[in-house]
Structure formats: C-alpha cells, structure tokens
Amino acid sequence: MNRNLPKLILSLFILLLMAGPVVSWAQAEQVSMEDLQKMLQDQKDMLEQQQKLIEQQGEQLSETQKAMATLQTQIDQLKADTGQAKDKSKETIALREQQSQTADELQSRKDTPEKEEAAGVFPGSIPIPGTNMSAKIGGYVRLGLVDSLDPIGSDDRFIVGTIPVGEPTPGVDNEGFTISAKRSRMNLDMRMDSSVGTFRAFIEGDFAAEVGTTDTYRLRHAFGQYKSIILGQTWSTFMDTGATPEELDFEGLNANINERQPLLRYTKNLGPTRSFAVSLEDPAAEITGGDGKGKFADLAARINSPREWGHLQAAVVLRNISGAPSDDPTSVKTTFGWGMSLSGSNRFRKWSQKDNFKYQFNIGQGIGRYVNDLDSVGGQDAIFDLEGNLRVLPALGAYVAYQHYWKRDPTTFFGSTGLLRDLRSTMVLGYTQVDNHDFQEDDAYRRTKRVTLNLLWSPITSIDLGFELLWGERMNKDGERGNATQFQLVGTFYF
Image (spheres, rainbow, N blue to C red):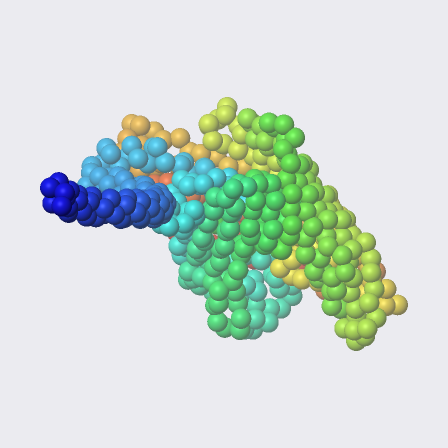
C-alpha cells in the first residue's frame, strides 16, 4: 500500500472543505450586485418623482407669490390710507385737496365715462385678489329742492317743452315745491388685463325712471371698451359732452344734443390735436301720429380737436326714419333724416384762469330725438301728413354759455380762510325751433327759449352746493305762448 495515499486523501478532503466557502462567496457576491442595481434603479425612479414634485411646488410657489404681491399691494394701500386717516390736521387735509382733482376736472368727467383711459390698475381702483382685474366704485349723492313758481308740467326738473300754453290742466301741469334724491347715481368701472391688451366694462344707473308714481332704477351707461372700440350704451357720437355747461337742472339745456343709446363706436386719433369717431347707433324714431320702426342703424361721425384754449367739434348724423300710422300698423313708410352740429369751448384767461365760454349750433331734419327738449316732448322726428306720407320735421337749436369764477379777496374773512374756494357762476341762453308743416295742429310745438343763471360753491373738490334761477317760454304753431319760472337748490357729494 502506498504510504502517501493517506496524505493524498487528507489533502483532497482539505481542498473540498476550502472550495465550499469560495463558491458560496461568489454566489453571494453575484446576488449583492443584482440587489445594488435594483436599489439604484429605485433611487432613480424616486429622484424623478421628486423632480416632478419640485416642479409642481414651483408652480404653486409662483401662484402664491403673485397672490402675496397682490395682497401686499392692498396692505400698502391700507397702510397709506391708515396713515392718512391718523393725520387729520388741517394742513395735511388741505394739501391732499390741492393734490387731488380740481372742481373743474371733476365737472369735466361727471358725465363722460367713455373718456376714461383703459389701463390696468387705474387711480382709485382696487385689485381683486386671485384675478387680473381691478375695480372702482363711483357716482354721487344728489339732493335737489325745486320750487316751480308757475305751472310747468314736470316735478323736479325744468322741461321748457312741457310749459302749458293757455289754461293749465289741474293735477297735470305741476306747480309747487319738490324735494328729491332720485337723481343720485352709482357706477362700477372694471378693468381686466389680458395677453392682447386691457378690457374695460362700465355700468351706471340712477333711480330717475318714472313708472307711474314709483321711482325705479334706470340704466344710464353699460358698455365694454377695448382700445378704440366701444360696444354698449353710452353717449351718442353726435353729442359733445365737452360743450355742456355746468348747471344744476337735471334736465339740462333745451337746445343741447343729449342722447344715450346702444351703439358700436370706433375712434381714431389723427395726431395730437385731432380725433375722428364713427358709430352705428340705435335707429329708434319718434313719430307724431305713428310708431317708429327701426330698419337701419343711425350713422354718426365727429371730428374733435382739443386745444390749449379749449376745443372744437363738428359732427353729423344720417338717419333712415321708418314708421307706421297708429291706425294702420302694416303700412310702414320710410324717409331720410340728417343733422349737423358745431360746438366748442374757449377759455378766457384775461379775467380769470378758469373762465370759459361754451356754445353749440345744431340743424337738420328728423333729429328731434337727439335734441334735448324735443326728445322730452316726443314725436318730433317726423309726422304723417293727411295723405299718409311720412314727413320729417326740420329743426334747429343753439345755445351759448359763459362761466365766471369769482376771485377771492384775501383781506376778507372768507377769502383768507379759503371758504370761497371755486365760487363760480354760469349764465346760459338756449333756443330751439321746429319748422311746422301746414297740416299740423295749431298747438304743435314751434319753439322754446330758456335762460338760466346760477351760483355754485365747492368747499372741497368732492362737494358742490348751488342755487339756480330758470326761466323758459314755449310758443306753439299758432303763436300762443306760455312761460314759467323755477328755483333750484342742489347739493351733490361725489365719490
């Protein structure tokens, strides 16, 4: 027997014992690498999820920052208001009034809402959190005390065309004293920023609509504006708001072009001192002896030229007037109407820095609905003749107005304290006439005259107090006349 055989067997046994751990370690090493690769992939997936989560949080953070910026703007405004509210010294209040709009500037925008520029967060507006919109509330509270010394046919205003000619009708032709606040109004002005520019919406109303014996809400303005385009209800393009004198009477001038109606208007600037506007407007017709039928929109256009000394405006309107007789609604007749207007304002700095002269001259056929007094009376666009033909009514109107600001004497008590701030007076002469047809009745509207004189005082820029004396006369086709006198005491607070 080989003596080395036991050693050989022992060596083989030892090698077998050692080979087992080596194989196990190799297998373990292979399993660990697979686990590591899986863990690495899991980490990659987790990182991708976290990246998406970070992006979402970034978007939320951006929205939160915008909301915080809007909130900070409101807080800053509140701080400013609070700071102003704490300081109520006469000097500080007087300084703020000097920095605010003057009474003349307030007057120029009382009834011209479409002249406001459309631009983001505008003066006096409040940003609406979470939106790209801002809003402003405005209007005024107005109390009028009206004393009619003669029968006039209206309660709290002076309508020259309703002055009775001959014996007044009891209970209809009003005479007496009235106190009313229904002419107060409120408006909401909204602006919205967008990727294509700023949009604007404006709505205003008062409680001057008279339905029976109840005073109800009346829509005055409701329009949207985008750049040079206005769509909705507002002042006619044929009108010149800049030539309207400052008066207390809510009715206003008998000869003034004064009409609010639905329209679509486009305005184009023709340089720094001239602008052109054209519009399609409501064709409603006011016909004596029949009902107006709108077939085509009224076409109105104007050229306005603002200058340092005032302004000048020329305007035209073209109308297709349609209507049917009251006794034959199916027999619709059509005629053509037209009108021209020239108006303006001039400042006279020789006597005072604010003295001004305003005027307007209107002429046309079938423009009764646009002329203030003729519109209040009604039926002055056209009339059916004896043969059933629709005939337009030629009309004209003109007025002149002069406003004077009274100088303060610093040597007097009121002058030194500033209590007579913006004390002013306006005198207005107005004339309106209709060229009657031979077949019209003897009591048909022929002409009216109107004269007013007032005294207004603004103790602060947001308050007007005033007294006005009005006289008017109506003459019929047959030459019969009637006249009336009225006093008005009015207080107005603008906000």
